[in-house]
Image 1: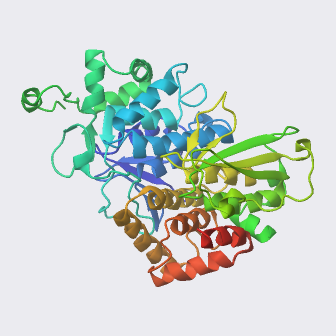
Image 2 (image 1 turned 90 degrees about the vertical axis):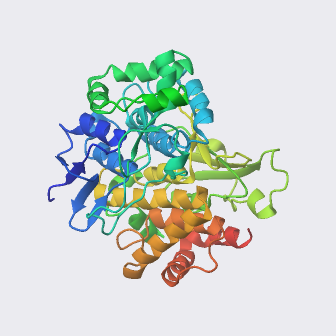
Image 3 (image 1 turned 180 degrees about the vertical axis):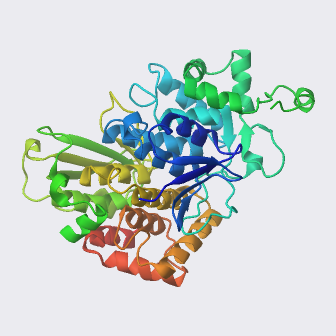
Length: 228
Length: 231
């Protein structure tokens, strides 16, 4: 088969960047920097939605087991991928979704099985930074141009602070990052977030992302310039 | 029809399809579903599963939804002669229940999180039909995922989002008979289900209408179609 190319930009969703880190030795996909995020499979097929790209990279890297180890675990991964976009990634659902997540994480370190899967990547990514999806006006859109499944896609609904200028798709999750800094909030989710952050792939991606201005007060928000 | 199974499994030869994921023990698949959004794709996939496996299917009504129609109350037709559970490989149960997040699935409460989403339940059932679903043709799998995500948008989205999906599938179906490749796939099954349960089958674009009709004529859609008509 012809070479598959994934273009990523500094605006690529956190989940895509993490999945690239976990699969780059195994996927055979060439990763290039560009203005847009797009997985180009063949001359007329490209995918731009986060979940489609992450699933593809996981499937072509079976050794990493990011899609779980059996079909029940695959179903659980599918569940968490939807959860991360439709519930946790939705401002009106965020608080409820966080409580549910905290309850599920009580006795476990990983959402599915005993190692990192796309489920952890997708959920951690939303806790780090809301991704409001990739823009769909890129030059590579043809047959399968895709908008992400995000029930509340309107950026105005997303919680957090705009970090970059102009048509951004990365938003800091100011609410959860605020919990992290203050040590308040859902303790199992905080433990889980920090545990994953110790892994080198999460470290690396985390360090490339802008710091999040946490939600404290309007004055503080206005005074805290985004730090790159 | 075995042709339907083959096309659902894309280009996979049927030799390894018979391999059972759970051998010797009946596997319970319990699906909660809201009667306002019946997951018709489950009924279609049940037909396909019953061609490969011995499936004991039953439906139940939770006390949270007393007014379930007779059609949904008895949504599975005759299972054939009564046999003991040990003669079956799968027990597929649908429980009609009010859950604001819609369709969900549970197999082993001790080891799993409840799996939400009709498309995700459908993905699981498709992997039972074809264990190589993810491995054989990753491009096709990615295309199917794309349309399943769009079907999720139809099931859970607002009217504007639904209209956007309708435009997308109308464009696709103007040039191709099916949503993915040249045969019926899981994408068609779940999208058809989504459009039926949202009653979006009126005032739809021509290409979509033609495709809906072709789907409805498939043998494995017959029962689900009847249930949809009675909604």
